[in-house]
Length: 89
Picture 1 (cartoon, helix red, strand yellow):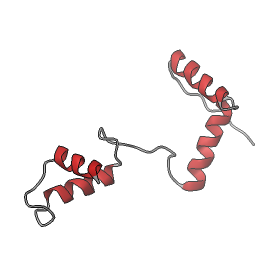
Picture 2 (tube, one colour):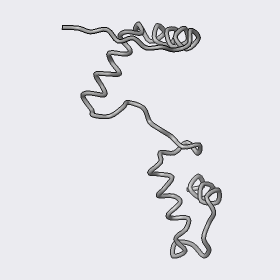
Picture 3 (cartoon, one colour):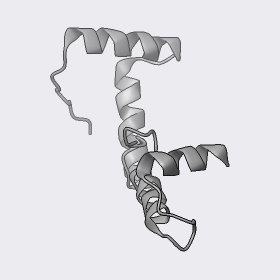
Picture 4 (cartoon, one colour):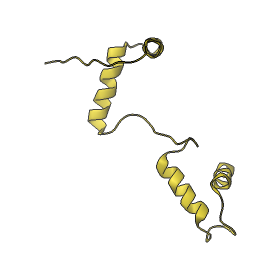
């Protein structure tokens, strides 16, 4: 048995997504089925949610915890200093 999914989106978003799908050799319905199948198989949404610093929320929280732990450094770092420190590793 099958069902139909109706969603609303801008015409531009649909057109741009269709171009990308076709470049990858699939149509939009196939992309949606792949997305849903992955979601059901893995139990998660197949998107990596990143913060404004291009990090996962957990990684950014861990970094901020390290930055505020004065045992690791001679002085506590601010968030930007901590990001610079990590990028230098």
